[in-house]
Image 1 (cartoon, rainbow, N blue to C red):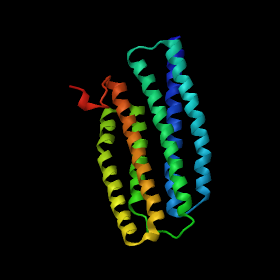
Image 2 (image 1 turned 90 degrees about the horizontal axis):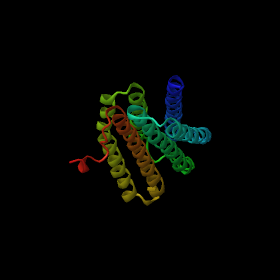
Image 3 (image 1 turned 180 degrees about the horizontal axis):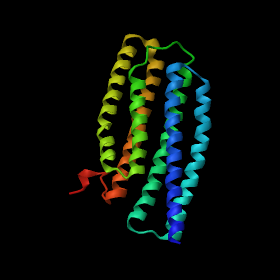
Image 4 (image 1 turned 120 degrees about the vertical axis):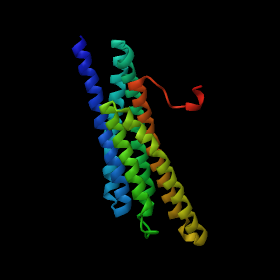
Length: 220
């Protein structure tokens, strides 16, 4: 019985890592579609979303079955509850990658507003945070998880910088407003992806240490 439970926990871990890899691909492809102006990649992202959604349901069902039938305690209980939350964050990241392609589609119908520099950079940071958050989960590495949390301010700074830049474009030339707003929206989607990576990092700290750090102001 114990051995079978361990196998189920490993299956949960493997499915989460598989889902994380798919979501990472979706993030990268969504920005590649924008930067390289490839509409075909939008379809690829949509196809991967279907697979992510199937995994989302499968992982939820696995977690709920483990909680109901195994009645886990201590570390195992924290692992499964963290798995439920990580599953939700990964699914939301996938949705945000799709949102990026939705904003990209009308941009590809018009000339580029400017060469993209900060958005691809921001995308790389957000995608790396997502990847490293899963690595911290795999390795049970709280030091890595805390490092991910420290990167969030850099992503926020880039988002604000992108907003200021495109606001200037809109103020100087009203014909740029539609394109500038879509690009600002994309930067916000990337910022939310980074936020979900931070959520996963917080879940890893909870899983390993049993410490909830989500709302430090409330912990007095």
